[in-house]
Amino acid sequence: MTLSRCGIQYCYLKAAETKDLKLKTDLMGFVKTISYNISANTWPVWGDKGITISAENRLTGLDCAKTNLRLAVYLNKDYFPMGNAHWLLGAHYMVEKDYTRAILSLMKARSAYKRTGKAEYILMAQGYLAITELVKKPTREGGANIMSVVVKLKALDTDDANFFASQIETVLKYMSKITKKK
Image (cartoon, rainbow, N blue to C red; front, side):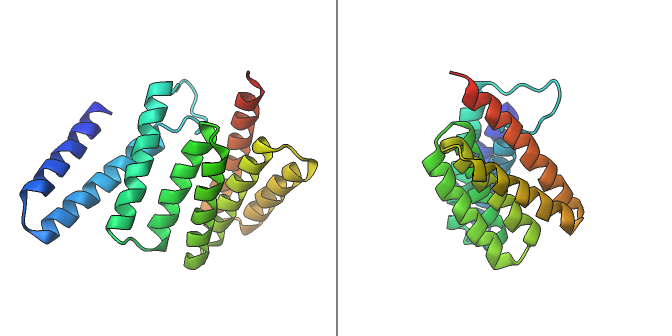
């Protein structure tokens, strides 16, 4: 993480020094990519055995998710990277129990993914939304909504869809654990 943060700082400094618009845009693209990777790697729900993400690292990841989204807007990225940026920010907000912001970000992710036509990603965002709504306000139908998304993903039977179905089940287990803790 330290090297990645140094890379971000380097790109920011070089971008501030240059008058070359293409170079500045490329450097900001590098910052966006590095920020996305830090954020994704500090999200504690992947379910990797033996990996523990500290509260400090989670907050760094949340900050990097915000940077990634700001740069997606600044760089005028298309719908797929915008969807990814909103999804990642929403996923971080969910873990931090900021459900209102999580829902807003995940709705924006779903909307961006709809513009791409990628069914797996639309359903993935819908699954994250359903989990967030369930942990915010538990209902019987909330759990059914989540399972419906998982079934639809599995029916698509693509690598991404199967990964997302498994991921949604992992996220649900994680969120169930942390919402029971006082």
